Image (cartoon, rainbow, N blue to C red; front, side):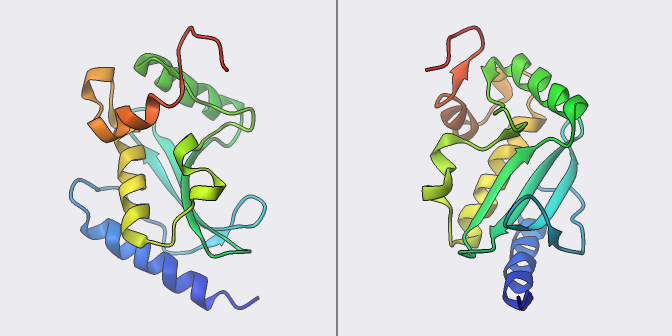
Length: 152
């Protein structure tokens, strides 16, 4: 498969992130095959818990998405502890957090929309208390189970 179109779109995302207000994390220069049919890059060391945000294109559709994804159980535990302090139970069984509003049917074609989503995830990972969350992050988290409630 020719990756040049994918690489171009991912470079557009990097460029938009570099100029985004409030974004200061290093971006990897190389793209790689990630999970399943995903091709993209990972932003590492986000927030006090130094967590990872996965930025990717679906190989089958070139639709863009972002999520918080753990590599291994210890990183999954750090993610869960972080969201516990914010009062939400968000991790799936595969150790990922993909907001329900952004699931497969709501992947995006827009670089600016994807950058907004990445900035919301950064806000979630940088917040140390629920009061520090932006309205956008809080709106996303309210779609998920509050800590101590039963999942529906």
